[in-house]
Amino acid sequence: MKDLAFGIVYNEYYDGSSNALSGLGVGGKTFSQDYSWDTNRARACVCDAGYQGLDCSQRMCPYGNDVMDVIPGFDENSLLGMPGYGNEVAQVQTVTLYDADLNNANFDGKTFAMQFTSKLNETFVTGPIMWDTNDSVLASYIEGSLKKLPNKIIDDVDVTVDSNVDANGVIIDVTFTGSSVQGKQHKLEIILDKCEEGCTPRITGLTNIRTFSDTTLSTVEISTVGSHNSFECGRRGKCDRQSGLCQCYTGFTGDTCGVLTALL
Image (tube, rainbow, N blue to C red):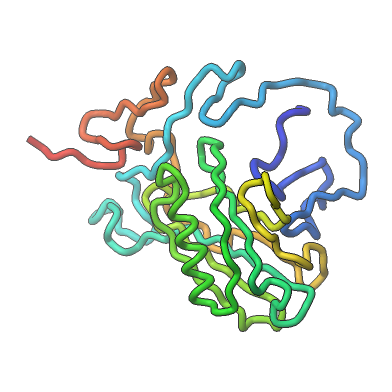
């Protein structure tokens, strides 16, 4: 269908070929063949964020972990895998950025941004993130910017930076530890083009970044698949398509029905 893209977010385009995604990194969207012979075969609505359905008339409800699910590694005859027992595995996204110059000289002092797409297809862009050659400082900048996104869309996240892997490469691990970002999430997008006066977020961009290379490819990958699931209303409630709010089943409460109520 013409208007239904393979990828939800930037850098995940697909044109029908088996190798369409190979060789593509941050910013990559170039194809060597034309597979557009059937692009006009069908049409469909592309709904605004928070809406779904054939005519985009239905509201979407928030997604969350099913609080009663058994987490892998638990004995089903003992604990039910409730959050807090220490066996949960959060999703980790690894951002690899390569500078064409040694020691990331072209990145030092520059600013960039990150974009996050929620499960409701809402997009949020961070403010300018200042590049710093100190790994811990850069990690704190990125972590703080992600946590400051509106509506607490990312309520908690851990970030680590390692610039010792390669002379001109930096590896950024983003671990989604918050309750609002449990389970599978869309890949982060790196905003690296210059955005000058009248543009937002106003960033200098990361100059000379390597986006196409056999050995030093800048990418965003899901390096650890989270053990949490991600269901509408946590699979413990019914979505009200008019309001976009979860109507939790008896015994459950919360935005995504992920909190057990007390027995009376």
